Image (tube, rainbow over all chains, first blue to last red; front, side, top):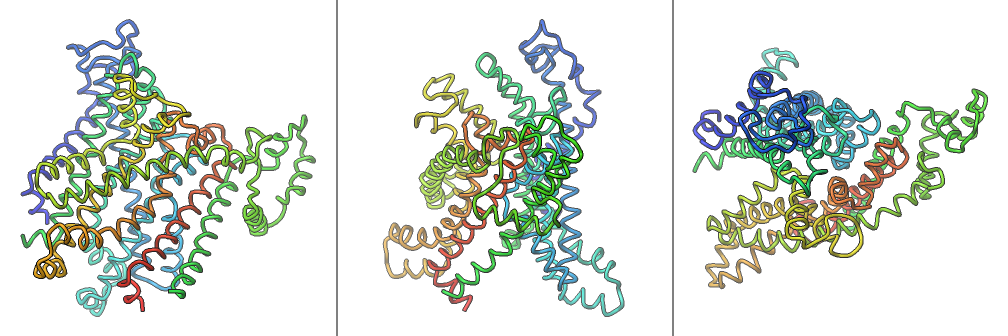
Length: 274
Length: 313
């Protein structure tokens, strides 16, 4: 599967974009030409120049530097969200699918309830309850999203539980934990990768949307959604402020979605035959 | 058929109980004391410990958790959702009722956009697969799934309202105010359904019945419309139907971009004002809508598709 993926130029491009963005985010303090918080009010809405590669915003802050620092909350918090979601989903899904019985019933009924709300609503409710803060957005996203993973992983686990290699492993005396981590996890890892890369795009959109609404990352901290919220106020006089953060979100989310599609193609047995 | 409907109806009962329980737990997790909040709403000048204890007994807050839950559920079934914290003169039901029509207008027109645009485009993309039309549409679908909704809204306002001055930028009133926000809500669904219909059509084209129809010498156009499209639409109609509550819930962001006075904006305002009963009612409303639309379209699909009935029987 990985070989297939590396042969696909589109997948390589997407991984390249994601890796490059992540590196830019990590090394933002060294790459950024200016302090993202330093304002220069006399020089507001300046065009691109050597000092300010992408111009300045309504307070005269360097847009390029803010973009680079904005990678941190956007990309890293969405990765954190996915890590939490997959962790919780894998634990719940495998437990339900492997042990079945009453445990399965309880977990799946909770999953049913979670899936009967649109994710956005639950996130808003949790943020309302815990208070407006980006940390709560991450918690809320994990809280709603794990149910999807739990259901998918449960189905996969049930499929593999009665396969011969698992039965063999059990007959030679392997423990539950060993079977789960050594046999089950690698089997479902591929399906997991597809869903996870598509959902990373979702998480990025989600974090930036909530920041745009003022419920996520708070004001002076650079974040793409929050930058767009500020750009909204000067839309009539300086519409170019909307471009840079918006394009950044589209490129990153597009790369995640495309990578997910490529992974799915690489996994699809029908595609392999062609 | 009858058995299936009864079974599905019975299955929604625990689901609805679960949803309502979640909403109830939600409001009980709030850090502030409801008795104290109630006193403040009544504008009691001095709040003493005694008064709080008295109010607690009066509101039934001293009763066990489950008793209170069923009490609350009973009130909800009678459409009594309590009063707003920030504005005690208004009931929650009144607030939701005031804002809901605007949201339904928005969701309704979005649904029209979704159906009118995604069906023909999806159909044509499948028929003219790999031509320039299909390529452009695939690019469009890919781009719109990666674009944040609020950004699309801002760009549309800038292009159509500010630069071209064709439509009002925001607000509520005439039909012209509705066009842009509804399109913004619809956009991501349009691309989802274009893809769904296209893929369904392409899958159906490989089926044996198509080969048989061709062997019978039917016209290509008739095969496409009468056989392939009809078979592909089934799952699409169900999917679109089930996404109606999602459309209603999905207006939140767009309502805030376009200053549309619907329940989504009410919800965001309530979050900032910590008006918990309103948020609770909104979550409950969307959850219940979700369950009912799922139920309705499940039954509809079951009634429309004889294959499903045979498989279950």
